[in-house]
Image 1 (cartoon, rainbow, N blue to C red):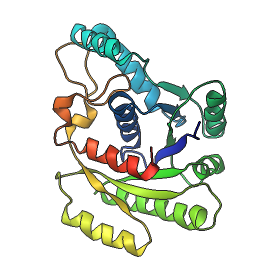
Image 2: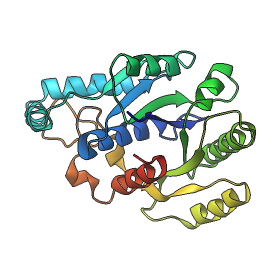
Image 3: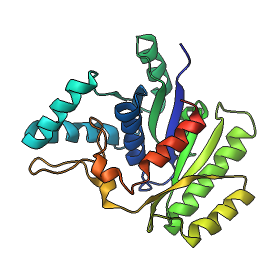
Length: 252
């Protein structure tokens, strides 16, 4: 059995989309592409993955349309929803290893983690990741924070050999248009000078990324920890392209 790949979407500043990207990528890989995943929710300030799962259970239990959708999907899927384990940064890596030793067999372990570099336990957790993906948005404060965070990881953890991290990529998220804007191109040039790089895929600023169902109505779901994204909402989302690019990088 090959060793699972440890992956985290991490940022220093909240609001850039790390938890949403974690859920979307994990669900796409697991439910649509057959990649076994395990999610460690170790952002103990808010535990977003737990909140997403609880919402999924509520809407698929109370909305008749989504309940039928969920039942029909799992009849064909023949596996349970992927596991989400709550932890904290100090214990998250051990929790993942223990779960694998108990019999879990994930190809990828996703860690939903706050990315501050001022907390020793979080730095230790970041250091055992194989790959880091840092959401970056056109918002000036978010952009500066993401670049500072990625630069610190490269200069203090990767180039010094003080981590397992193989590479780090910034991910353009919540960009006003579906294509890269001139601002993104300019910033990408600046990233090159810093020895950083972003993924080619750009995610637009679309309301679909927040569609997580409702207890009434025939509503489609895009972000879910229990179901794949609604195929009608995938068109133009660039999520398939993002997942494909990530898969090439992490080699699963």
